[in-house]
Length: 449
Picture 1 (cartoon, rainbow, N blue to C red):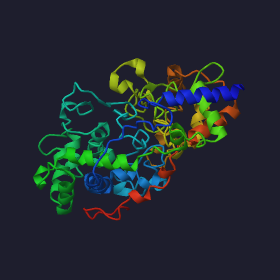
Picture 2 (picture 1 turned 120 degrees about the vertical axis):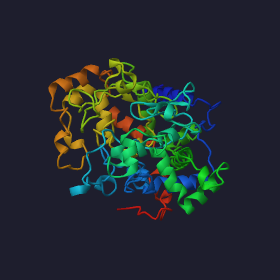
Picture 3 (picture 1 turned 135 degrees about the vertical axis):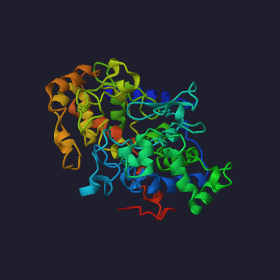
Picture 4 (picture 1 turned 180 degrees about the horizontal axis):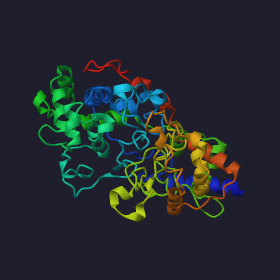
């Protein structure tokens, strides 16, 4: 057997083994997708697109996770509350409406996150399912997080509304922003209570909640847990992506993938001549180990409050407090990866080829970072911080020193084949998500600026 054919055969065996609940080839994998009622999904869709959930009623969940932009926003770093427009056309506003700055991390795509395989959220994993916690989740709000949340994805939906730059607004602008600034999430007059009160006062929303939940008969029965669970249900439907050529291949259709895609699969699973492979970090059915790795990712943007001036982002260390976790970030799922640029915790790379080539020799790539890869709409005062870390040789050296990924020995042609395989992870049904966009929302607020 030719070596290339042997690699493909080994990859097929590895891919089939990765299906944790599959008993035999040809049986579709157990994706673990949760099932929700149509009424719950419909409620979630309206809430997802409605700006009623923001302090100043000027931004929705969909603003940064839009169905027209493949559940992301197309920017390296998002522009939150106060911005104008959608996707790469979004800007930072002007005058009194100028946003304080960009958010520090890239918007994660929503594909397949309502699967039981995903129990950890955020680039640093600061929210994770944990049965020892009262809420069932270790999370930034601690004991303030209520019980009854359906999933980690639902628990995550509790948090954007309390972030002052993400959805709440700045202190002094509205009472929800004031509560967020005071870190009052679950108490009387807290963020979640105020937002729930808004929905309880809207008859159309009350009807939607009553239809969606057996334990809601009156407006007073609605809680923000109901809100978060409905949003997660909709995100699960919009983000369903399990019919890629690779999925069809796993289900038994050996012709679903091209010859080059199969060669790329062989390289992805079996590795280079030193045995170093991609599947070590991007393993399992959704091509993620759910672990954390330091891969010398260039640091762009204003940072997340770390370092002597706050412009660094120490990643997982912010959660664990362990310096050994500095610059480690979650290994992302690779499903629909061709649709979700830019890449990296801060969106440092704007093309799939660029991020794959970064993995080939991370430290060299860090030191030779092409700044044109960054998709950062100009800000009159904050743009000066865009490359403040990359302009500091000491900080760049620290990122390089933390790197865990040795160089690969793949040839340029082999990299092409790996890219072919990564494109085979795209569900064509995810390319056009316009059907998930409502024509209007119950609040009557505009869907677009």
